[in-house]
Amino acid sequence: MNQSVPRSLEDGLATPVPRGRMAEPGEAALDRIVGLAALLCEAPMAVLTRVDDDHPQGTSLGFGFAPHEVPSDMALFAEAVQQGGILIVPDLTQDPRFNTLACVTCAPFLRFYAGVPLEMLEGQGTGTLCVVGHSPRDLAPVQRLALQSLARHASTELGLRRSLDAERAARTEVARLLSERNDLLARNDVLRREADHRVKNSLQLVAAMLGLQARRLSDASAAKALEDAQQRIGGIAAVHEQLYRSSGTDLVEVSDFVEGLCAALAANRPANVDALRVHADKLTLESSQAMNLGLLLSELVTNAFKHAYADGMRGDVRVVLTADDRWVNLVVSDDGAGLPPGFGPEGRTGLGMRLVRAVLGEFGGAITAKTGTGATFAIKMPVTLATG
Image (tube, rainbow, N blue to C red; front, side, top):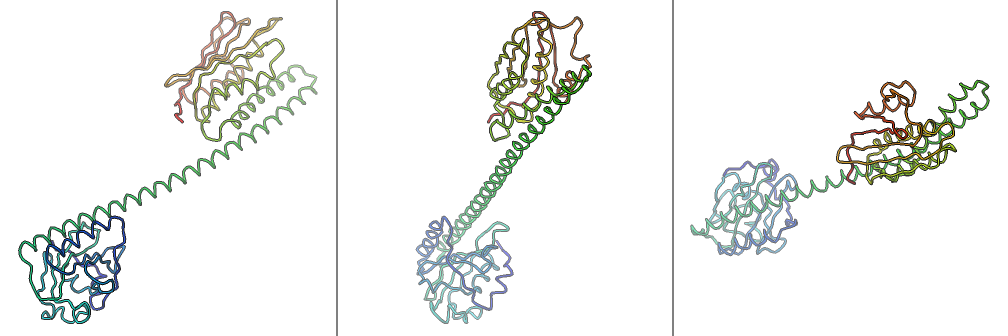
């Protein structure tokens, strides 16, 4: 198979080019090939030479040479590559193409050369496997076949090593990219937690200011509106507080989150609510999904605190959170007076229900309400449960 000679070879034909031993993983296999070539061809010396993008001046692996005697002349190499097939020069001193080469006129004083170009894939460079000696001679037919077979084996070995090098480089690059990704995620989590903390502090300040303003108003309805806003903002602040307290990743353990949020809400429950009782399945959600869940939970619990027990009644408010493969189900119920006739959450114009419908509308959730012994609100949210 004819192979083109790299420009670096053409440039180096007139001048010996220094080359070093191949020093790559798996060199022992190539050592055996070079040694076997010398043995089968009954030659005292053999050389495997390769030129590629990583070694534009060439790299050689020699057998039977002193370290400083591995031939560095490129003329023989270039001739073998350009000719294709096997190149045999019985007596180098009698061939005008090579009789002035340093390896012929000086140590190691070569006389005989037989080389075969390596059949490298495109982009993998060129190379030769050759045997040399100090006396003029030829190769027997079986020795020619053996040298050609070993050259093909060396080509395969070098191709495999190139593939392994590419795989190792790819693995290293993937590891680097994954490390960068993890660093970015970690920084993002720190920023998210810091944002939750700052938002919580800001909302608490706003809620406190609304409370102060409400106490100064003489208009009862205006004061009530400010108190409602204060309570709602306090609930949102509690959501951000629990997100801040969650693990330092973008994933939130929802049972801990819900229990912590309910504890914060229960601390401000009215006197006629005995307890806020919570049951939450163990599941993990992304922080954005947990945020939506927290907003809905805060609104429904706050609504139950305000309306469930009136006219001297008292009792508990219950929160139950369950999940399956596709849905999270949130139920908030009480044992109070129940809902007025014809009540439907979809038709309510109050700020609380409008907020609930707005959050659910973003991702296709739904809310239902029923009355009996008390009121029950059930929310169904489509989610993707996290696995880590």
